[in-house]
Length: 230
Image (cartoon, rainbow, N blue to C red; front, top):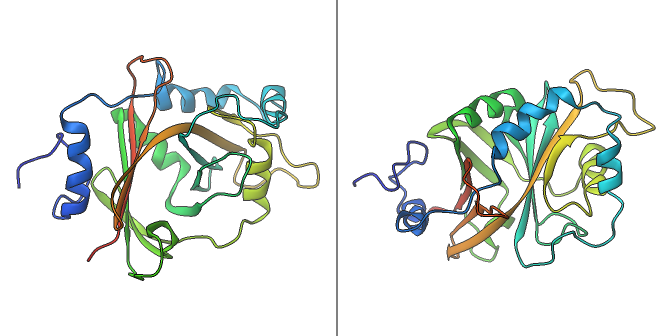
């Protein structure tokens, strides 16, 4: 099969993922604002756990931007693993939550390429479940298999802390204040990035999320693919 959208990162032998990639081949995908993810994560060392802006952004009870876009949040301690949360409404619980088998620092390095594509391929197949309700996933990042993860059924203290602070945030990146009843983790500060994504359903066994740029400026491309093999 010929290369689709010059993707070095997705296992192209999977026709479901290839079909979703074709969604972008004839048009330029929207990307995050100038500097995008890469510059956002470069800001992390300049912010502190006492960042007042994050606390203030967490106060609104209504999202800053009202639309039907899906919200995606990537978060994790600097020296720990990174997690992914997908929400249809930032005021509600995630519809999908998983800790990826890669360190936050490793994901930062991948962002240097300006193209980040994460593919999650279900290791289980349950016909009665929706795609994102599957539990065991093989995880790929920019063409390399990085390991396996299990979808979280419930949120732990760290996940609740992040979701509560960001319940009114539509997009942004930074460092979250440490919970008042928790000492600073040995893994460092909790960093986060939240963006809005266009959700494209290829079939009941394939979906994709494409990061949306709010102002049309050029920037890094970030996509997430979900696939359930037949």
